[in-house]
Length: 319
Image (cartoon, rainbow, N blue to C red; front, side):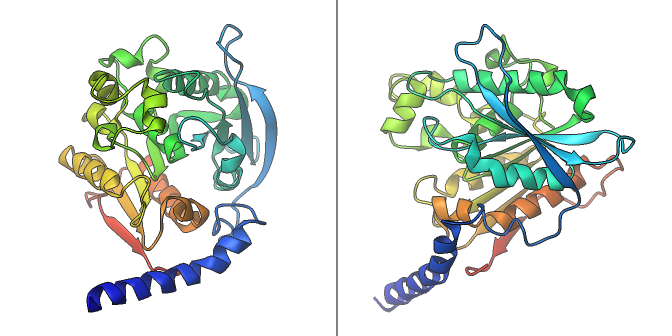
């Protein structure tokens, strides 16, 4: 009883500490903490560009954030940015602050829409991301993008989609007919990520996304799980996750990191203490910065040291 009481008091204290942050979040750019460090570049934004082919089931749009760099500054990395919402709601505007921060850090950030379940079921959303990657490659010369340094950035269902895209390869049936070398990611920054759909109980969101319960569609659940599609060719991953996430339990990040470690794939798991699924996103600024630092090192042209890229980071509860 005493232990439970102490835990309850600590949780209540942490929530009280977060309350002012969440109240402020209602009227500021989200996630919080992205403005704690100075910008490397000014940015400009190209709004609502259609990235899908004319014959696509529905036109989808993207906002493109460009770093304002000198014309002779050379090629730049890029980021495919994908919002969350349970595969069936929310909008790309949720990721505006993250996309802008990416551009301030020197990335060409492409913040996209994708088709929603249940009208469009898996793998429609993966195909949307693949089309976005072809579109980015098509504009690579115009926007001075280094196509060997395109990362995926997402939260929740958006993190799931970029993670699944990152583990695709030519041997995977899902790589056709829209995949190929142009759709390969060089790294991933993913938060609150569902990595193994088979570990969830059956529920409306997954049934709408996949098309039915796991007992009826076990192969689809396996195909839609980044953990189940992972092989040695996957790029480095920076994962961040709230340790009190009740919607996507942190076990999803733990098992995925273990699988990455077993394959020698560079990764970091950044744990946010006393955060649930939504509060992790609302206060994700420091995690985003740490993830970009990690990927900058991973994608640097110079050879990396022999020091392991795997690790666990923990933030204090009131950060």
